[in-house]
Image (cartoon, rainbow, N blue to C red; front, side):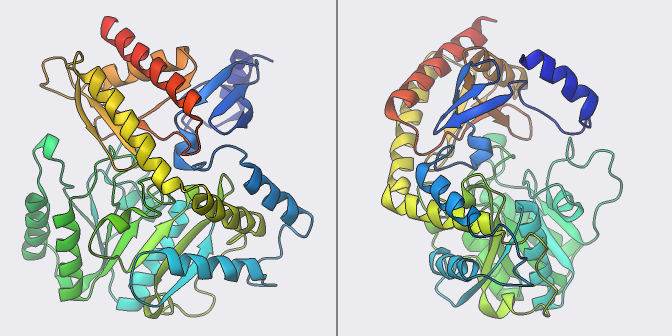
Length: 425
């Protein structure tokens, strides 16, 4: 079977709104390598958008899922609970940053985790309003879309967003916005449009994902924490993309000197199985009445079993240190490329959550076409890359943290050749 044949069938069978970065149809995968239905091998620098941080089909994760398959696949925890759900909650309560008593709930997707974090914050505070940041991404549900700070493609054509959601600019020095500007915008919002006594929560990604891999400055995090403490707001850290060793910490918030009240997580939590979680201050998490939180598939036993194995692998293979090592090597290579590539205007990101931003050759404007040429050239050489950013001019790197050294080196060579080809195009 050919990729082109499947692409044609896909166009007939699947709704147009499901976007696709490639027309390469996967057949099997191991660690950082994927083979398509034609037998072609690809190096995966996407990891399913930071999902398989422990690599495709990690033996320990697969063994845990297979063992659980032999027991049961579903009872619904709210009907007939199971021990490994509670044990995983205990592990996350211990690992999520914050020196306070915590409780956890499990859901299925990152968007669902964000939805439930907002529900908890509203229930705990009795307030309706939520503040988010421009460029942030929090999901495709209506609350997720409303919180997301990017219109196309996430909000376009879907009508009115949820009420009482407000946005302020996210600080990006490259684009002329500082942490002081962001804090000033918050204070301006409180003076002109929104009583802080109506705000339930401020939600922020420690490193913006879809928005362009911009790390939040430490002074912004401290400022948000101080505002939340002063006005009784809940600080929510969206760690859906930053969690589970990706940034060189188990959670990106470990890199700051303040802690969020509630943390959302998904993606890398279960090594490729759908599982998400919300962990937060016990008093906040207990605000909702019984039955107000949960879901039929929330905390599916297979995902929970996989997540236990993922946490074991991160610890046993010291993937936080590995992420820092790989990220350093990637940045060094990009800095070398940058010497002869005026379009490459910024290299950033903690750990192995690295981005390269491209502008026009004279540096005057974001260049999404160049970033897309790099992605397309890489794909033609069997390297899978992703783009992101408000302007679409950022290439983000999310290879599995378990990638073998020789495969990583091969991928870096392809990356350099792809950037050279994009320059020549």
